[in-house]
Image (cartoon, rainbow, N blue to C red):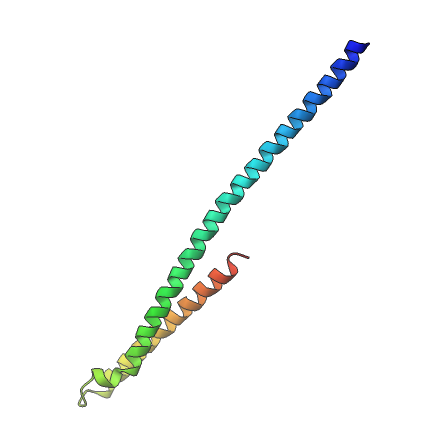
Length: 112
């Protein structure tokens, strides 16, 4: 009877150890997956921040192009040429600001 009791205790102990090992492996797997997701999120966030920085710089260049348009053209240039230049420069600035806004929203809301 003592041997039977010892075998029952030993089998319960082994089952408890196996369950603990299983739980430890599952926890380690979850930690590894979270580390991979964190690296991916950091990569995406840095990419969107870089896009936002470039868009801001290009929008600044386009704004300067709009402000300095009177210096680029001689006084006898046609109104159509000046209007086309300002229109294209304004569209470029607007697209860069839109890209800046999209990158900022993605970088700000991505980590949430």
